[in-house]
Structures are given as structure tokens and as C-alpha cells.
Length: 76
Image (cartoon, rainbow, N blue to C red):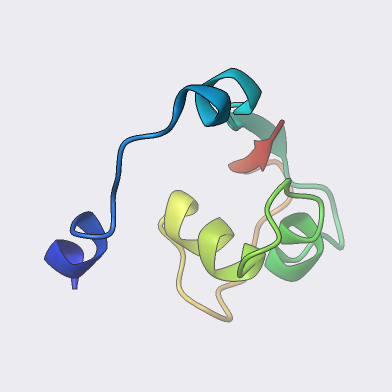
């Protein structure tokens, strides 16, 4: 699956390079009542934000977050 993903990479055109904005990770502290779904909804990605949130934080689907825990979210 990884190889299939890598095979889809291509070079950016000059116009794409000048308009591309890198995404950044931000470390946030889990607050009481926060869920993976809620935090993922704040991420600057539109393609499967919950799945991406789980992957970058090494979490399983349905795994509870603990208040005070640090997690990463994708921001612009």
C-alpha cells in the first residue's frame, strides 16, 4: 500500500510551487470532553480528517483521549 502511494507522487509545476502552502502540525492539550472527532474537525484538511488525526497521534479508532494529554493537529 505504501509503494502504491509513493507511485502517485509527481513533480510540482512552477505555478503549483508558488501557490502551495505547507501544512504544519500544532500541539494542543486535550480538554475535558474533547474527542478525536472534535479535534479532527478543527484540522486544516478536508480529506478524511479523523483518519489523519488518528494516524499522526498513533491512536486507534474509538480510543478515548485523556484531559491534559498532548496531541497533534494539522493547521495551515
